[in-house]
Length: 263
Image (cartoon, rainbow, N blue to C red; front, side, top):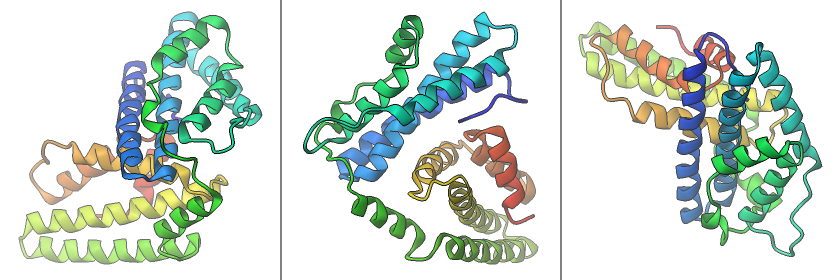
């Protein structure tokens, strides 16, 4: 779940919508490529952000304490997913799985909210031919992400690599090669991002690393859309880090920033 803190209500709402669009496009690409694990993760991630936007828009208008009301309603809705009925078909597709999850969430809604949420969700036809990933598929996805390591070992390795990349960046900076230094710092930050996402995912019990897929997609897309960087090594790195955290919850963004190699 994203949170509402220092960001304005408009910024939060806009970010939810942007995240939903990003994840929908990613889900379509993964489905086309036959990556059922990533398609399912990003499709549901897009649904979650779309719901958050609807909840925030509705509660902001109706409540004098919108943040408190947002969390109360959001928690109630998403807890309903635990009671979602599995797809009643022999070989469910990813579309069947998402439909079942949607039904579980909508069961907690009043008619007006249900209508608003359904209107905010995208169509699922692109998932109709993608079979639900098996347990083996998910395990293979995790092993590919971790390069065959345990999560703890992977995090240690990535942070060691991030420190090494930043050391290179500082050497290039001293030599006056600012462009190369920024590129090396960029590589360091993405190594650190991956370490942080895996570590935080495992910490909340997401051992299948589904949240890693979703948040990696959001962060990498956001940085990829940067039109340019400010002059100077430190301002450029700061800008990259701001964008990396912009699509995450505020608390997540702060923890990510604190975990990256200092400049």
